[in-house]
Structures are given as structure tokens and as C-alpha cells.
Length: 469
Image 1 (cartoon, rainbow, N blue to C red):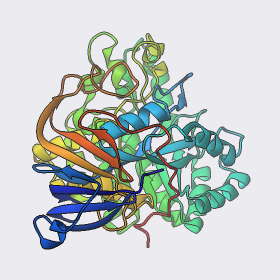
Image 2: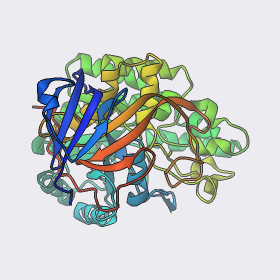
Image 3: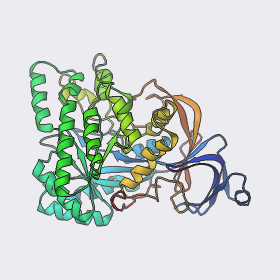
Image 4: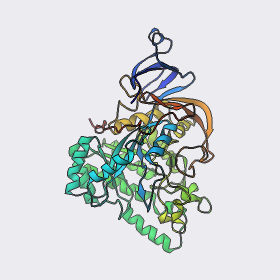
């Protein structure tokens, strides 16, 4: 339980998606009680048990990462971060809420999959968490279960147009799930890649002896991401349901989203830091090094990055999440030595999203407020967590980060806290660093020291998407 205390954050620049103000923040019983201009009579009259000096610091909402995969079973192994290690690493990086994916096993009830994920997370999380539900098997029973999950606060459902034989749903099943979500208020999340066509290209590449990691990017063609994105949009129009396309990586897919949004359709898109900062150059690193960067959708040639940044500025892309799904280079990624199709798909990233996006502010890609919008406020709104999460306002949870915008740091596996043996950003220097992190008013990171605990994090039931009202 949070201790009943008053905390005062004094002297910082408070950044939200809407405002930048020099203000002091008063916290009581785990929530933001009030804000007042620094130096005002109101602020001067406040007393607190603990005062945090935020001079020359940004005071920002804790990050909301709505796409993580802790302990995900995939490709004969498991994501290497547990809920304990992954949420601790998230806290180190200034993220104070994750939304992870519970997985339905084909032929089994949604309830069973969700209960499995509750059990994995319960008592282990350092920060607050919520769940989406992966639908592996759409049938009359699971369609009815969707309604029950929405009532329980699990209000989003992920479907896959990729991975035949694992998670894949055909267009008929996708349409049925979309129709159901149109009625119950749930949000359909789509992995948009034409998996049937990709499997043909994989088979042909391996037959030609093209086995290296770089071929993972070559067979998962941008046009097949764009085609699936287009198809998902049309199915959602037929069903009358909203659509959220995950991990958008290709400029052609951004164009499909932009065209739909120009028609006023409730279609949304997310991208991830790996697509903004990494490219096929990484997949082509010599030896087997490229395996570190195998994820799906895959990294694209560098020229796609400009379209992603533009999409974030024009709001054709609304959210940056990590799709954090780490696999160790030794013992996991190397399952695909000699066959790129056997490399577990996923990258570590939950710890670095806030810093990389601050670097984007420094580089002039986005504004400070847009940083907070795409990393905190919009993900919270999109998935029914706002204004409890994603902002600094009276009544909001005191999930707050004191951020030093001037310090530089070098990202490295030697210093990160994710439970994985490599960094996708090894040796990259970024400007800005998390200094202090509060989760519901409790300090969980304090000047380079983890002061939180497993079990502090609570499950947060979510309302439905707040862009549809």
C-alpha cells in the first residue's frame, strides 16, 4: 500500500500533451492534488513530508507503453523478460504503465488465457499494468467471451493477418470479431501483414539458400504490409468498427492509414522506436548479428523513416509503443542459425522509448508536447486509461517522471536493466535521462537507484477507447 503522505515537486517545467508550465505539483495519497505556478502564493503555502527539487528538470507524466510482451511463448521459447524484470526496466526508462498481451491458445477459452496472464503478473509488477487479449480462435464461444472481457476492463483484442498456423485469422474471422467489437465497444488491434503470401516467399528464399537474417526483411515485403493494412481498413468499414494497426513500419502502410483518416474513418496507427531509429542496415550486419534485429513487421530501408516521422507529426500515426519482446542473442535468437525463419521475432525496448523519443525532440522531429502526446496521453486515451494515466492533472494518478533534458547517456547492454544479453541501440548516445520516477506517488527510481518493489504495480481495468465517444 502507498503510504499516506504529501509529496511536493518544486521548480520544474511541467510538460503535458496540452501545456508547458513552470509549476509545482502537490501529491496526496498517490494522486495529483494540485498544480500552482512556481513562486506563487499558493505554491509557497504548501507543505509536504517530502520535497523533490525539479529545478532545470522536466516534470512529465509517466510513460504509457501499450504494446509489450512479457513472458510471451513464441517460436519454441519465451520472451526473456518476466513481469518482474520487464516492469522494473520500464520504470528505469520512465514508463509507469504497460498494457501487455494475454494470449488465447487455439481451441481454448479466452478466459483461460487471461487468467494465465493474471497469474504471471500478479504480485510481480513494479508498475501498473493492464491487458489486451490476443484472439487466436474466433468462434461463437469466444465472440461471447469478448463481451464479458470488455465488462471486466479488458477492452481491446488483437488479431493477426500473419503467422499462419500460430495466431493467423482469415478475413471471415476478422470480420466477425470486428462486428462484435462494433457492438461491445472493444477496439480491434491488427497485426497487418499478408502472412499467407509471406510464407510462400519464405519457402522460396530458403530453397534458394537465402538463410541469413537479412532475408527476414526481404520476404516480409512492405507491399504485403500495405495490402494487409488496406484490407483491415475495408473489413473494419464493413463491420462498422474502429481499427488500431500495430507496429506500422512501411511508408506504403502509413499512406493507407492517412487515406482512411482523410475519409474521417476511426482508424489509428502505432509505430515503434525500432522503425524510427533502426533499418535494414542492422538486419544486414555481418555474421549472425542481424538476428538481434529480427522482428515483425520487419525493419525497413532508411527511406521509410521520414514517412513515419511525418505521420507522427500529422497525426496519421498517433502512438509510439515498443512491441517489447526480448529474446537473448545466445540461446534464443541463435535457434535460427542457418534458417532466418526460425529466429524468434522480437526486440527489447521498453526501457528506452522515452529517451529515444526525447532524442527525437532534440533532433527536431517532434515537439516536446508531441513527445508526451504520443508516449503518454494518446496511448492512455486510446486504451481507456485517461485521465488516470497519461497526464499531470488534479485527480490523476501521481505517475510522474523528473527528467533531465541535458545529460547525455550511452545505451548499452552493460547498463540497461532489461533481462536480455544485447541492446538494439548498443553504443548510441542520446540526450536526456530519467532521474526520478513516481508510481502512484511512491518513488520507484531515485537518482539511479531502484527503490520500488515487485507487487507495487496494480492491475488497471480500462474503459473503452476514448476517441470514439
